[in-house]
Image 1: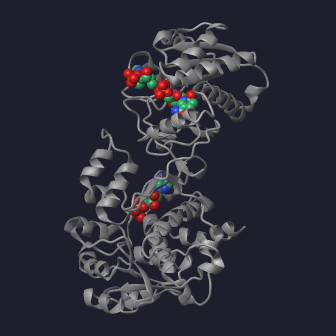
Image 2: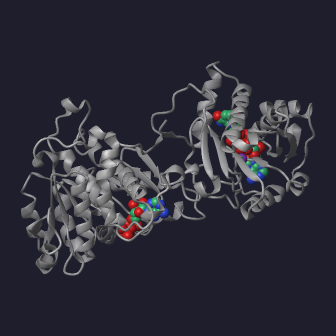
Image 3: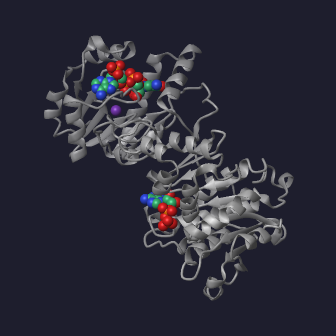
Length: 518
Ligand SMILES: NC(=O)C1=CN([C@@H]2O[C@H](COP(=O)(O)OP(=O)(O)OC[C@H]3O[C@@H](n4cnc5c(N)ncnc54)[C@H](OP(=O)(O)O)[C@@H]3O)[C@@H](O)[C@H]2O)[C@@H](O)CC1
Ligand SMILES: Nc1ncnc2c1ncn2[C@@H]1O[C@H](COP(=O)(O)OP(=O)(O)O)[C@@H](O)[C@H]1O
Ligand SMILES: [K+]
């Protein structure tokens, strides 16, 4: 279940399911309500012991319809249920109206404001005001609800589909948004559950199966999944596992490149060399053991180094210095080999603009600031107040660059120029706040370069039973390397936990790799 669906994709899927005759809208709504009650009782088992008190806030659309189903199901379990509604029964869409009427045969419906005023003693408040149909900022009583819930309430808040006010696409409030302890959504998660402020507003996330059998569209956003151990297993000689070259900055600036290089080695590249200018040679030599060092003073030296066809991938950026990056970049890019561009290489790239000959074997790994320098219009459109999601911005950036773009953050989006896109959200059960430490991005860049170098190695696809990393010669390799590295990077941080510094990440990798095999 790796797909993440936009509101439009979810609606289309629901429509297809109904058209197929497999289910009616009413049936889907009933299953949704049932799923919400089951999730509520699973999340707060104490509420299953004896009937509690619920307040259900129902909106003017089908999200409200789900709310009426939940109100009825809880009442059937003996709960005291107060329902507050926004809008009129006449304005409800048909399925929601039918569930409103069913509820009316067993209980009252009050105005939203009136119910909010009396919700203090409730065990749980169900937010069924707006889901994927939210089209503008909340006003009036709905806005008051969002503000109340954000200020903190004694009652547990369960949001149906989305906390009301949260944009399903961007994961940002459209104006203000409610805060829930648990959000229960249906069939597949939506980008807003993972992006930006989404996880903060959702609390915990539960996705309920409502029996939709229609297949998801092909071109969807996917979640980065745990890699298969076989994809990372080593084979043969060290040269069979690839050789990565990490370009290093001058004296006093070599730490970031050394971190990246060590990560490339730990992720399994057979050999990793640091390309070091003369000024930093002593410093680097005093610090490294398994890594190799090669003097690369400038563009000519790099061109000479690249005549070694065993070099599978390059990494430029960490601690490189913008001037050195600008000098080395044209040679590195013209060569056409797999190339990770991070930090100073991205700054240098922003200075020359995207006229540089980027290619589909490149992976650009910007954080927010670097993304804004490279793609100012996309950064603005996807920033606060903009209307574009981080996913869309990353997709467009990848098309424009003709390269894989990995846009970092707690929500990392990775897109290829052909439109494929992945999301790794370090939230919920995969939270990794310890990654917010200096140098962790350098480690990620090195991990990607290490995997890309391995992708160029002559791995035996037949014995491993699937395509090697270099499958589509510079098509799959960079994207696979970027997604795998992102997962492993977060996993290493999660395994280490509090106190993590960047140096710990490469050292935590063996345990992560061992865990994949187990
Ligand atoms: N799709 C599926 O597979 C399934 C979907 N299900 C459920 O249906 C939900 C989607 O239902 P939905 O499409 O009716 O949208 P919903 O979120 O109820 O809101 C739309 C209404 O709100 C209104 N409105 C919007 N913004 C507003 C504002 N700020 N202030 C005031 N009004 C505002 C808007 O008015 P309009 O924009 O048209 O003027 C319209 O009347 C989904 O989240 C899930 O819970 C499940 O039952 C099972 C399977
Ligand atoms: N709060 C967080 N939760 C999860 N991952 C994070 C968080 N903050 C940062 N990261 C990750 O840590 C890395 C930081 O990279 P970057 O911003 O380049 O830092 P640096 O330049 O110090 O190496 C990225 O991979 C990013 O996705
Ligand atoms: K809601």
